[in-house]
Image (cartoon, rainbow, N blue to C red; front, side, top):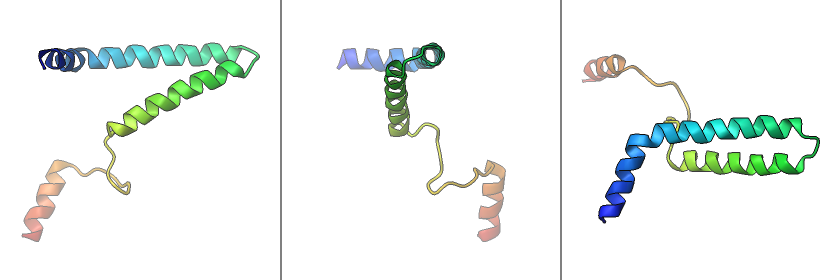
Length: 85
């Protein structure tokens, strides 16, 4: 249990930096495979990208409203609540 708390604390502190590193490496890999003449390595990078997208979708990143739509400022929400009350 203590190890789990340490892992969660580590990722909460270093998560953005780790995400930037992983996405940066993915971007560099994408550029390299685009320069090679074969398509075999292209599919490997696409699979990694799809895996990252699935992970982000599971974590609900970015935070999208159900059914789409625009986000409303907090002041506008409070104003509409007071008008409806």
